Image (cartoon, rainbow, N blue to C red; front, side, top):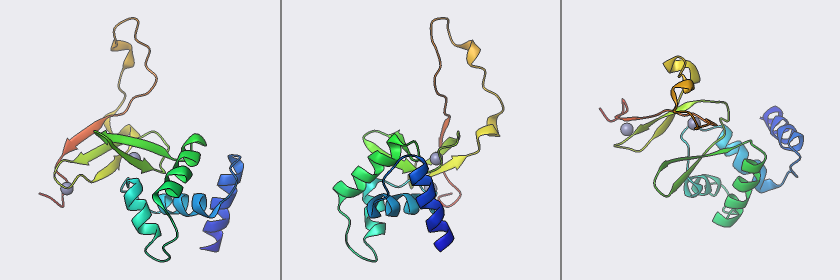
Length: 138
Ligand SMILES: [Zn+2]
Ligand SMILES: [Zn+2]
């Protein structure tokens, strides 16, 4: 646990971030979950033990972590921002019933050939979003 904490502090510092309790708590929380939580869900989780966080501080911590490329925002639903500490390239599966989002390994679909785009379009980012029903909902 202490080793993990040291590791998190090291990562934050390596990105030039000042280590604040909020940034630490938010990043640690995101690293230990894979469900792509919303700000509200992170807040609920952090306040379970000691209610100290507000939505504004969690949001500010997320912004700093995003700017340092440690966390990414995942927008799979209109108007709902979710956060992901997995910043390696990957795709997402979204259950349309329970709205759970899970990661799909980057090489799951083989290579997607971006040279088929019409001339004039320059690709910057590619991500496949698969929508369907997860095993828990079937
Ligand atoms: Zn589901
Ligand atoms: Zn993800």
